Amino acid sequence: MNKLFAPVDAERVKQMNPVVLAFVGDAAYTLFVRRRLALSSACKTGELNRLASLEVSAHGQSGRLEALLPLLTGEEAEIFRRGRNAKKPTKSKNASVADYVRSTGFEAVMGYLYLTGQFERIEALFFGGND
Image (tube, rainbow, N blue to C red; front, side, top):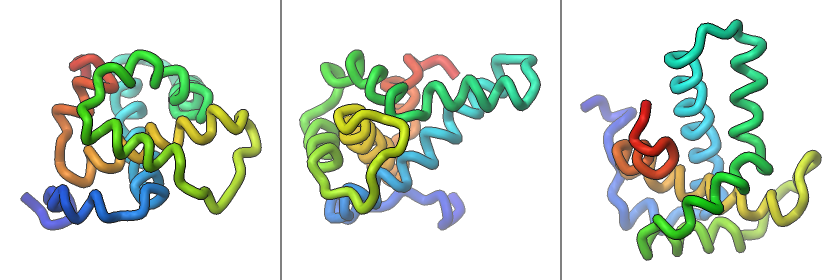
């Protein structure tokens, strides 16, 4: 596997700042959502962007989290809590504080799974195994 996409040691990733994990997770989740939409729809890019925005927004991620939380492993739940509770350098412009902090936890889990190369786990958790 290319070094750019090689999995990173889980212990190293756990030591990362949870906001940095959320930074990576936001990009990874956006890419997975866009890929799924592009492969499952004949919509034009404007509509695809609108649909993706509904899912990758703080509100959309917070809503998805309701079904996700009971499925998290202990390790993933700890990453979520660290991300949710981390001090953020910015405030959300378009989301409630509750949605924003929950979405940061959601993105931290996504970042952890992405960096550790757990793509099948991402698929199972976030997309029900359908891609």
